[in-house]
Image 1 (cartoon, rainbow, N blue to C red):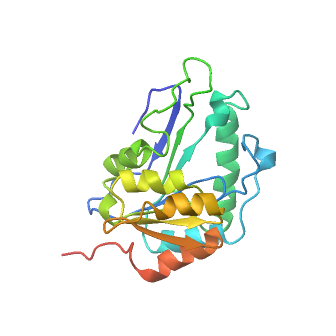
Image 2: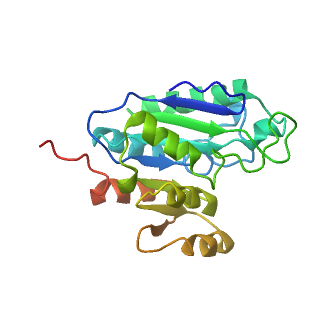
Amino acid sequence: MAIDDIGLWCELGKPDAALRPALFLDRDGIILADTNYVGRAEDVRMIDGVATEIARCNALQIPVVVVTNQSGIARGLYDWNGFAAVQAVISAALAAAGAHLDGVLACAYHGEGPEPLRIADHAWRKPNPGMILAAGKGMNLDLARSWIVGDKARDLAAGAAAGLAGGTLVMADECERQKTIRLANSRFFVETATNPADALAVLAESGRLAKPAQS
């Protein structure tokens, strides 16, 4: 799925004939330690255990898709080349653990950026669901059975807006936790976890993202 847009990044794996649920992950704070606008390869710090758990999801044929706001680009702190360099380090670290990402989507638009990136409420910027919806369409994903893991309420809000089954909030402060709890209803379940690796392990072990059986 190609995106000709200065403020968007979209890498998607090939669609599967079977409608599959996916695991959506925020990047900074879930895969990487959030050191405040990670835009250089040398600043990458992988969170312990996450690569191993992504590898387990890969083995279970669960598509793993990153959806990340990248306002650091709009703010002029780094550019898409820096983003690509960070992604290359992530890919190498995952590969060393026998893991991979099936999709990566990013939105650089932000209300405090210069033109043409000064869009405060772009459809792809979380809490809006645009990145998730684009991945669902491009990869033939069963969004109604999919799940999102993030460290901010806006991550789970995007999942709720996209019609996902639920989300897990990780390592968040009380303010984020309270905002996230208010998202829970009969159609969107909210869980919490103390760290990203545990959140992914619970999802893998639960079977809720299992590939549908062949008829």
